[in-house]
Image (cartoon, rainbow, N blue to C red):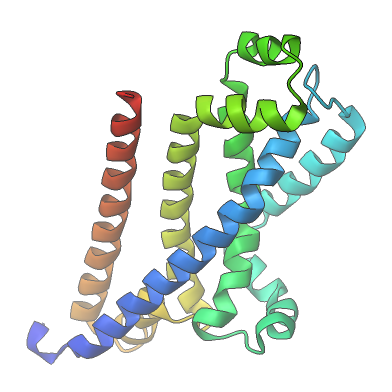
Amino acid sequence: MSFDLIDWSQISEASLDTLSMLGGALVFTVLFGLPLGVALFLTGKRQLLAQPYLYGVVSFALNILRSVPFIILLIVLIPVTTLLTGTALGVRGVIPPLVVGTTAFFARLVETALREVDRGLIEAGQSMGASTWQIVWFTLLPEARLGLISAVTVTAIVLVDYTAMSGAIGGGGIGDLAIRYGYQRFQTEVMIVTVLLLIVLVQVLQTTGNRLVSHFSRK
């Protein structure tokens, strides 16, 4: 086993692809998942916009999405991905299924974070005549800030896992490199490097999330 034989330019390109997939998918996951999580919370029992039937339908749909293994979701969504991006391969072709796969997960984390907010604060806002939008924007989201940061951190780490799995269908990135060279061509050194890179990426994301939580906890 010789690390001198590794094509480091290929490793660098794969790392950039993984970061692109992670960044793009995380942005869209938060854009879609945050309002969905807020809507779930608001339509729950004894909440501001309680709609038990609507909550049940949306909750059931999210549970179905969360129960489908991501590798299967990748394959099932190939026609949709091709329609949206023109390809089911590479960075562009993987971002849509990544977003679909993590939005339901993130929305649940958002709902959980909002449930941790003291109900007395919500009732205080109502007593002062605040609208639902004002309560959400000025009370719920600020009070749930730490939980939301943790939710984004956990989701980002899950996305790292999913980007690696996307390599199984030519999704690009570190996972694709690990499968094509580390597994299929038995290049153990490539497998070791790619695994170490994924470990480092997860550690960086977790450390960043922890520091943000500590920073805002002191305020």
